[in-house]
Length: 344
Image 1 (tube, helix red, strand yellow):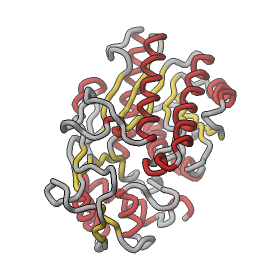
Image 2 (tube, rainbow, N blue to C red):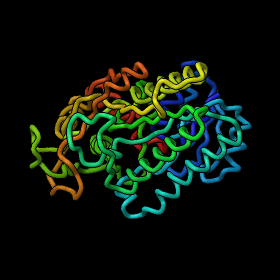
Image 3 (cartoon, one colour):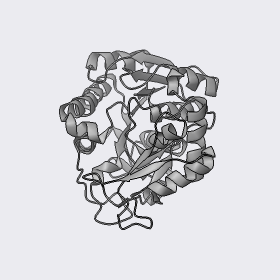
């Protein structure tokens, strides 16, 4: 049994699908502050399998202990947390409370219940402005937002806990830019309010919910002047969690860790796509133009950011397989069949 905190969210639901398909039993622990219980019903439709779900908050240790005991979980995949960079700048205390304190309470509950495997949803924002590209795991860590700093704080906590108690098997997965949706079209990204990320905004323009896309700057030192990022299909990302979990379980069975502390890997494709690359690919997927207008650069944005994913291939046998066309096609399938997300 795997306990998945924040399992009703975008990446959580896709990971639950892969866990269920791989034969794991799954319990989701979520307070639904930025997700919808409908997503879990759709996970069950996709897989033809049932999952348990428990409404609870990761800042409540007693609720976590009860969930671990009720589920009989042997491992935790930890997605629960807030994730908008801009919002974190406006409300840093929300992010340290939800992300850092929530993880502390989770670790305390795991210690109490004897659960010693944790896969943590980190972020490539821990690297900050890149000194070199592609970004490998040994790049200096210098996040530039409270969101990124909350992720780095959690990484440091996990490393300290694992160092003090080597029965813990910890996996730190640094995501680049998750996009796309499940090929069924039943689950996908459903942001509340104005999307913070590029592809869901493009999708809402394509489906008619928004008039036009703002392209923030077209004078960067990149092939077309727009910012370049490493976009990764959410299904590839979900499979990365499955591979990490299997590697940590194998290490626990062997009673030794081959990872020199916490397993730490990038989950990205190793290739950068510009904003206009995404717009052009999305136009091909949806068969209609995506209107956009160029706006001034946003403070803090950088020109280019993409992963070196080799360590994930070496340590857990994972690599991304789906390209930008597949990302856009699956996103459009989800958005066009669910124009208002889970509220359709």
